[in-house]
Amino acid sequence: MTHHIVTLPGDGIGPEVMAPAVEALNRLGDFEFTEHLVGGASIDAHGTPLTDEVLDACRRSDSVLLAAVGGPRWDSTDPGAPRPEQGLLGLRKGLELFANLRPVRPAPALIDSSPLRRERIEGTDLLVVRELTGGIYFGERGRSGDGAFDTCVYATSEVERITEVALSAARSRITSVDKANILETSRLWRETVERMAGDREGIELEHMLVDNAAMQLVNRPSHFDVILTENMFGDILSDEAAMITGSIGMLPSASVGAGGPGLFEPVHGSAPDIAGAGRANPLAMLLSAAMMLRHGLKMEDEAGRLESAVDRALESGLRTSDLGGDASTEEATEAVLANL
Image 1 (cartoon, rainbow, N blue to C red):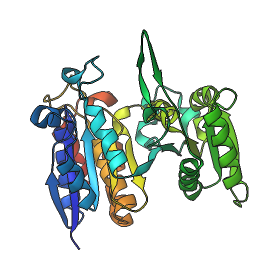
Image 2 (cartoon, one colour; image 1 turned 30 degrees about the horizontal axis):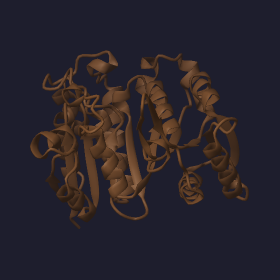
Image 3 (cartoon, rainbow, N blue to C red; image 1 turned 30 degrees about the vertical axis):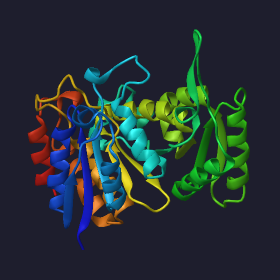
Image 4 (cartoon, one colour; image 1 turned 90 degrees about the vertical axis):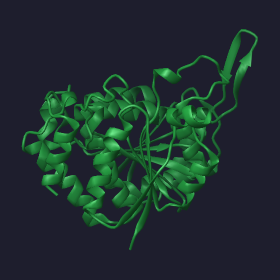
């Protein structure tokens, strides 16, 4: 069976890390890849970060692989100017991708690369489940006189469907993160999660205020199983959790919805400062391809092979510059492919 994959290399190092993922996937199955522009590259070519044609192509695909978008050349304080990140938000909304999954499991070979002590992070294996299409990022916003406003809104149905994703993923515990001592949306969030998780046998539910959660992620990350939270809190906490691994260049993510194609991308940005230098770490992109195989295409064995190849390459001493070594993108790719 041929799987139809849309690739969106995007900006900065995006094309450099997308190529290794395509090469690895071609060794694992029968894929047909179609490449399209998104983000800053699409702004330059079409004046918009996401065209209707690209969104339609993504809808017709089996899965979507995205590398990275953004960069200083498209930064602007003009609220009417197109921004690369709007392309990513448009994909999430257009594909109805309401759940972002970010696993955090330090590779055994990289435990000593973490800024946290070994004994603090050993045993960490958590999943951040972040609501993607509601909250302050999608609420009404604007300026009035010398002020500005951004509105955070959540409906019960939005909280219910993201909670169901977290319940399906949890092994023993869900930590629901909110700010219920201040925010009304957080009170609705807490009430809804409590109602849905109350009768799930074998799953412990705890509520944690977001400021405490930020501290506990550093203090005792191995405590967490599944962290369930709303859009903005999840955006911040998942990047904090990323550093447990020693480098944000190591973390994949998946955005999934109600049955259509999923979107799979590394957590890191476009790193324009090293674009074209051959120094980008492709491992998060490769691991995102593995998440696509598992969550998007139900190819569990192939996903495990790719993840194992990354682990074995690291155990053999592979280190890119962000991991304290000097391996190039090409050398890192060859090391993983040699272990497939």
